[in-house]
Amino acid sequence: MHNGIKNYFDGKFFLAPLDNPQTILDIGTGSGIWAIDIGEKFPDAQVIGVDRNPVLPRPTPSNVRFQQLDILEDPLLFNAGSFDVVHVRLLLLHLQNPQAALERIASLVRPGGWLLIEEMSMDDEVKGDAHAVRSAIDLLCKYWESNGQVLAIGSKLEPWLQETGAFSQVNVHKVIAPIGNNPEAAADTKLGRLASMYKDAWRSTFLGKIHPKAVEFGLTPELTKQAVEEVDTLEWQRDSPLYVVWAQKSA
Image (cartoon, rainbow, N blue to C red; front, side, top):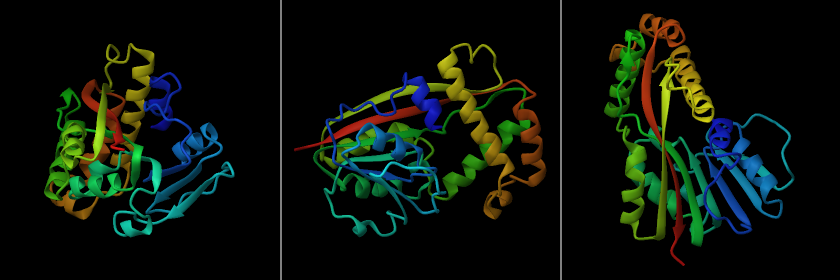
């Protein structure tokens, strides 16, 4: 996903006007690629990437380190206002009570610092002939909702951040990614590459282990197998919005 977003924004992987930040935190760092890129961009900064899962070893700049922890379970590991920049990507959708999580994350940004978020909303429908893809996505979304997750999370970010009263400005750039098998939707090369990466993510989801409670909703192995077969063979499209947010903490 990192390369798709970076390619779409002509090589940029953040939109905030960062001015020589010294302390940077990447929450839900995953592969660590964003932390590595930001560390190379600002070699004088100390960059920490945290994830609840281990980060696989890879070459990293000397100013970048990774730590396995769940910052939402133990937020006091870092003091409030500890970081010039805090970054979160595609994490909040998967959390229960994401508004409370967002408030805890926002507290880590120092006055005048920046909170950077990239997040999707999942409240759109699948169009086209891929019935198994549509059913699988719809059932997975119903399971997520039953689990307390917020499908329209991307569109909630701006009002939630404004409600905190902690930010002097909240900026949002919305990108509609036409995910699926629709040649016309992929005509724009940059957008097409971004959408293709999202499609690959859905394929990986269908191929991965499905939570037993999701199976109870009807997301059976037979359905996910059929969805995998349809992903690349039948015409379908899901216009999924990606929200890129950069908010500056009040000084």
